Image 1 (cartoon, rainbow, N blue to C red):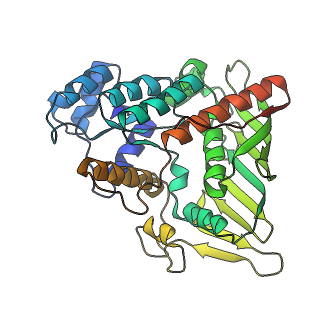
Image 2 (spheres, rainbow, N blue to C red):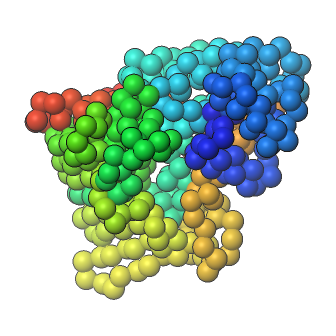
Length: 379
């Protein structure tokens, strides 16, 4: 792992998710740019001190020098956004597979460079858009793909939070400090949670952006990064969408949700009630699909761990990204084909698509109008 040192929120989430299924262990790390903090975190994780490094450059070089079977199999990158690219580049060039937190990079140039590097070095690259890991999100995707709701006409996706409604970054709040710094975050609410909303809509519907019109706002006085975004979306093929992401919506916690309306029915899923998927038709009763039941699609059942009635949520969804990526990496290392559902995780191309979305929306906000949002990531 690179990043995730003392006091880091997302690093601990990644470690718990990776460990959940007992299929992978953390064995090395450069947990902080501060060598003492990196050693402190390594000691807390009871790692071999010889494999706790003072920099990611040292880690990539020394791990690459170890024999096959002794070196790390992949690196997990959980740093602030601006560090994702140099770390990923270093490990890919050293021949290692990568799991990276989102957004993938803070520039489109870097995102496309990673696409080319992944292809040139033939490594697995997974991006932790973890909301795609929920079983009922996978159920929704399967229902859209099978034509259960007909042709998609409208998509409404929201991600409201309220934790940045006041300038807590000026009070020493570690997470707020870097997430509201444009040099380290790249974009604010748009990059942090708006990218999740766009990715969730794209994952479930398979729709590609055609054009968008974004209202990008900074409400907190003195803040130098966006904290509220509202946009209209045109999808290729004629569907329309609404995307809303906000970190100043007081009373909201982590309410990412999506509604997909088609010609034959509609679907609705809320992350704060993740084990239920609502399906409605024009002239019939509402159906509520529940996680863990035998009537669900095979992919939804494959990504569940507990029987029905036992809630699964955030860590399990995160773990689905890790276990799928891990099994794909293990298959590649063994010269075998991954399992039928193992490659179901966001890729480097998804990362580039997300970065393009962020900068397209920012440009629309500056222009105060519609902009072309079509994009194809390098393969």
